[in-house]
Figure 1: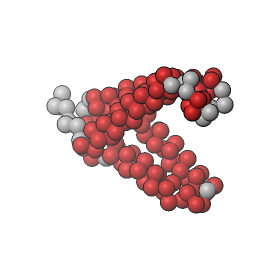
Figure 2 (figure 1 turned 30 degrees about the vertical axis):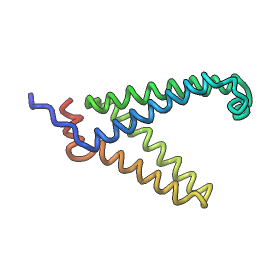
Figure 3 (figure 1 turned 120 degrees about the vertical axis):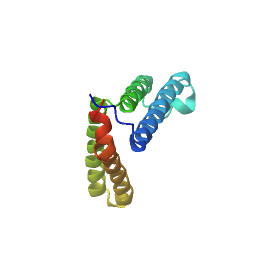
Figure 4 (figure 1 turned 135 degrees about the horizontal axis):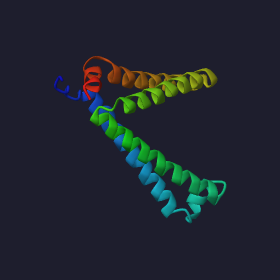
Length: 134
């Protein structure tokens, strides 16, 4: 059996950014729950049910993202596939946004480019070796 490949910087960067995103989602969900009775928070939602649902979904999404980020750091092929699918969906959404809202074209193009870079970083060169060896 060959020695495990070292984790490339690009994979580490993607995982760390994903972990930060997940942590921020968890914090945002918790803060929504903590401040759900504040008038300024309540006015942003049509009902307390939608606020609580949003908070819980934000926390759950954050936990899933943190777990996937951990999977990327460990070289999990499943985590790499999940991230790739999410990025492909993001590219499709960006294409729709650029088509439906031409004034948003530049932001949609930048977002799509970032998604494409993430996919490239996860599937080429040293990253492929890393995921294959784990």
